[in-house]
Amino acid sequence: MRGLVADYNLGELVSFQGISGGVENTNYFLTTTTGKYVLTLFEEFEFDEVPYFLDVVSHLQAKGFNVPAALVDAEGERLRVVQNRPAIIVDCFPGGLLEETTVESCRLMGSVLAQLHTAGMDFPDHRPSHRGIDWWRATSKSIASELESHQAHLLLEQVSEFDQFIEQYDDQLAKGTVHGDLFFNNTLFEGEELSAIIDFYNACHSWLMYDLAIVVNDWCSDMSTGELDMDKYHAMVNAYIHERQPSAAEIMSWPHMLKIAALRFWLSRLEAWHGAKDDPERLAQQHDPMEFQRILESRVRHAPSLTEN
Image 1 (spheres, rainbow, N blue to C red):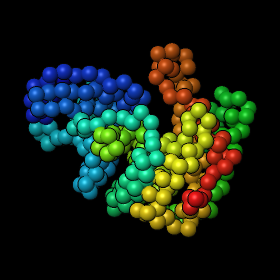
Image 2 (tube, helix red, strand yellow):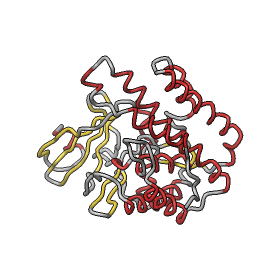
Image 3 (cartoon, rainbow, N blue to C red):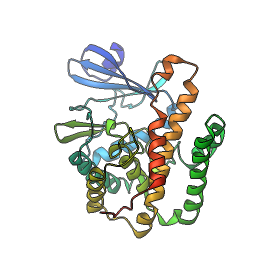
Image 4 (cartoon, helix red, strand yellow):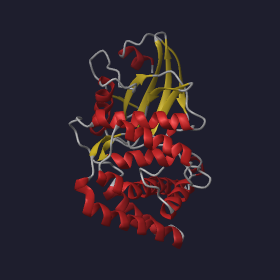
């Protein structure tokens, strides 16, 4: 570790500490004589897959966003190999995680997300999501047999419904570079101020309304019931619309996007949970799939319109 820090001209290593909570990557805080940094080891991506994500972050940093762009070492390289995994070092931004969202933080994030979408429209590389349509079609079929009958029915029915919708309307919906996983624990705040957006490793070229739906489902839902907090919801979507006006087709697509965004995270959590169920240590690290099953069930019962007041 000392040799790695020296290669980046970051001074002397003072301490390093593992960061808990990472499911897809392994992260460490590095404290040196010049400051505090984060080392990320990519557990799911190969070396040649990582530059896309680094380029997305560099693009957004150049547009003025507080995002963790990879530092370069003394040889001008951003990407290294640590413990046989692709690895980067980034600055550690000030601030901390929100304990819970508020109406004001939801309003702020709606505005920032619209700005992020606008800034990403001219990013030249168009990478499909590694957990997009092809993935959820295949994974839903393979995992349905592991579920209770009502769960399997909900899962397969919603995949089929979205397939029918998107086959007809895909070319009418705005796409751009999206974060893809902008849960509130992927932001840092100093008081009421947003200090950074982090963890861009689900970034991809996808529907902008899908990305907004991901954020709404996490930031504005009661996780115990799946129901939307309508004050938070209105604050977020109205702030988004103030910054970026969706088209008529996007407004029409909104209920579908709320449901498929919930399904995507229900399915990824189911996949991770079933993959770890025979390993108690790994299982304890997984997020609860039921949270997003409840959210999906709630959106099936009622998905509000984007312009509903």
